[in-house]
Image (cartoon, rainbow, N blue to C red; front, side):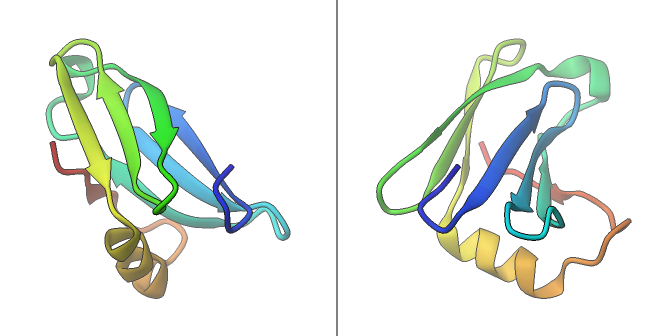
Length: 88
């Protein structure tokens, strides 16, 4: 959980989703690049400035989601919409 009460949940086959713990609603989701069988997102850490880093054990990369990226996606996210790409 981050400093704003949002729960970050990794999906090893897709990326990460961010939820509002007060409402349970999904605020955003970010997709790791590559085919579903081409990555394995498994670890997540949140820094004091709100940046999230996620590891990909198959591709050997670290993805980053910045607070600005999260704010932008939260502002436009609608349930059922397409995943937003993470950047390695």
